[in-house]
Image 1 (tube, rainbow, N blue to C red):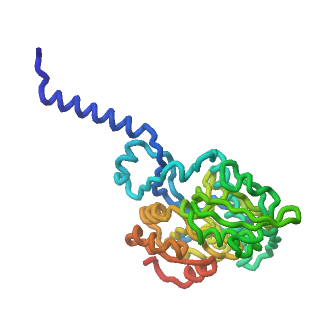
Image 2 (image 1 turned 90 degrees about the vertical axis):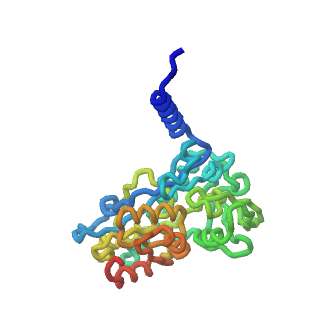
Image 3 (image 1 turned 30 degrees about the vertical axis):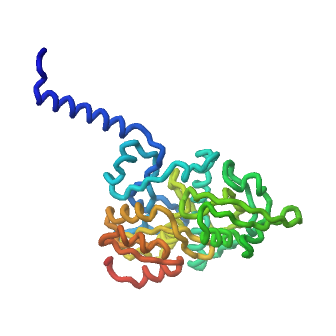
Length: 334
């Protein structure tokens, strides 16, 4: 019997390892992976009446997170890619939740952030913006989430854990002080009658650190002086709100960036408040790799962002107005 030479054995072993690695890289695991993504300039993605061209080399950028199913290889060796985070499938898709339902909810959050950012930015510029609040009224419950079967479209939420709720932002603010998995007590008014319900929460798909009930609230009616259009494709979630508002101010003639490449993240409220977001590790690394001059983040996210920022300057803000003030007075990029 002819003996196989060591070079041949090594070559066969290498080929086998390559096949195994390829299979492991292609085969999906039971987890999702979060990875840094490249910041994108908003100027070409936002169309507003009266916009002015940006000629100073700067710009406002939004940052997203690349989210997809992890391969078996990525699950076994997550540290091979800088900034990767593994998230169990049941965080993104709680038991009984259709992934398509979750995805539609994320897209609706993106649309809401665009409406809120537009209202905040135009109002700050002194333009006529009319906002007609509707209270914290349930528009619909999402299939597979805890509120389904407990709340109905038309229910008016009047309090959470004994704290009054008068506008949708009140509910958001109170929920952010709780943890996913905790049960909250709601008092709702339905057809003139008040009833109390207790509903467990699950992680919010857009930010797993925030509790989620699985409801959509009726949106306030926002009347703008002219249309504003966004073209971000299938990007979902509310975290680009601050960036939207800053870019709109820039496009309408306010020198926001002052020639700098400004990345920003943060959910924006109708009152101009800036709230924490998920994926800050990946967003910071993406901004750093792309040589952004500044990275504006919600105050609550700043400590984590600085751990991954390197030489990138991280600027914590808690409101749109504070972000504008900083950008107007800060010098240079360091």
